[in-house]
Length: 205
Image 1 (tube, rainbow, N blue to C red):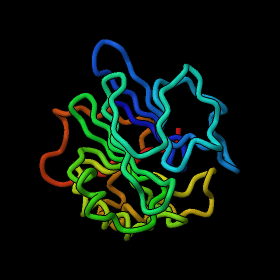
Image 2 (image 1 turned 180 degrees about the horizontal axis):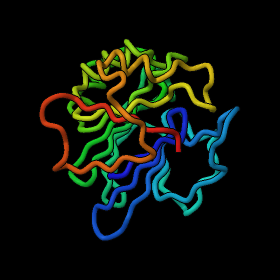
Image 3 (image 1 turned 30 degrees about the vertical axis):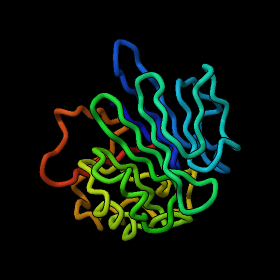
């Protein structure tokens, strides 16, 4: 599973369940400031608060922006109802890996949400503190879900200059100065950490 961060809550995930790559994008909303792709070709487009304001997605992708569960192109997608109407969170299962994307969440997770999201291998959590978790709230969500790997998203960048910097979250997780940002991460089931939760920091692609 390849994961890259496009800015704000937008991510690109590439999996290869069989002999063909499957491209998934989440939250490709057009930002008000900063650089962002004008369009992307993808197989699956997922949205945590509606598909309006997205950039153009070409390639006739499968689109999901409502709660429910479905499987397409060997990727199992579970969309969990968020705290507000029109807000959802995602769980993806593919390549013997599970991943959760919380979107711009700003309230503690409910027991019902945790039923689906807890114990995933990889957690994408917002940490910028503007209409979403700050560093402390994000760390609490990590403790509740207990993923093997956590990747912070929605922190200060050219798309969100007023968000908190990611360093606050790294400090909260006890890894400040120990994690180097990378453009893309490749995660395999056999390389998942077995003991402590690992923090992976992605620089904006």
